[in-house]
Image 1 (cartoon, rainbow, N blue to C red):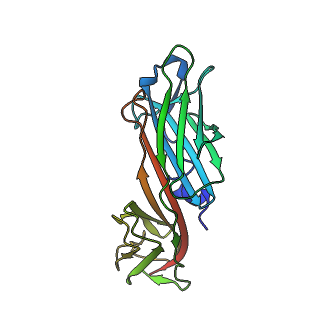
Image 2: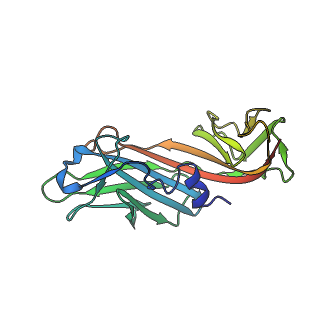
Length: 238
């Protein structure tokens, strides 16, 4: 079963873990148009969704994170029900909802104090959930094809597959469309050591995603992605 720990490995959960040289700024020092909001709704199952807002100043690739000061607040609604969002780390706010069905409407609301514009028109709907077929229980040689399957398919949403393991280089595969299967061709998973190739457990995560809309009052680099995420594990062998 997919977990938040596994998702964190691929940057689809716990995205607030800050690396390198970062700075923070109080939101009271910024107009709403100076806040770039990277918004995510990540459904780990048909009954569980994590909401995340990463707030930055200077664009979505900035290393300056926005701390909501007094009078400013971020929250969400999921199918009309209010969801509280609290600080997970500097500039990163999260909340959880016990809903994950396809078509669920999600809104993220940034309320400013009386001196600036609110950003209440961040909205989107979750794609349909899916199940990942069981992965092989026997070790899979890297010199052989590995076919990944899921159902139902044909949603038309974007599908992306990530793999990560200690003995291979991490890799992302853009599946495109939603065909229901994807084959990782022989040799596409590369060992980190050519002299002493090893076997290791590999985490595989597949995402079905679509874009939502963001409020025009925010920085134009703001974004909203809504995803269904499923994962499994297999053993990769030389």
